[in-house]
Image (cartoon, rainbow, N blue to C red):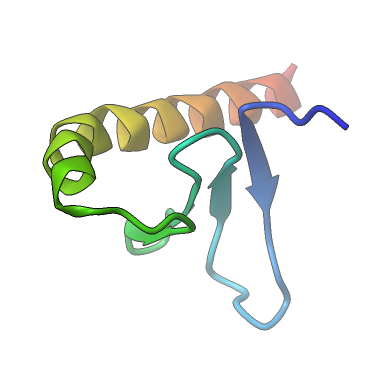
Length: 75
């Protein structure tokens, strides 16, 4: 099964949270309520250096996805 790069998620146990799930490597979930990121991958030291530089771009892409989704609800 193929998934989109980003998925929107919510959960009634976290009524104020909006989750964006990144399904491609490196997989992660970001909680837009507090910008907390949970990585779903394990990284070695070399990966962590590359991840640090890429993380900001990935989080921005997740936020852009959310903004795009919201704008589509308004249409």
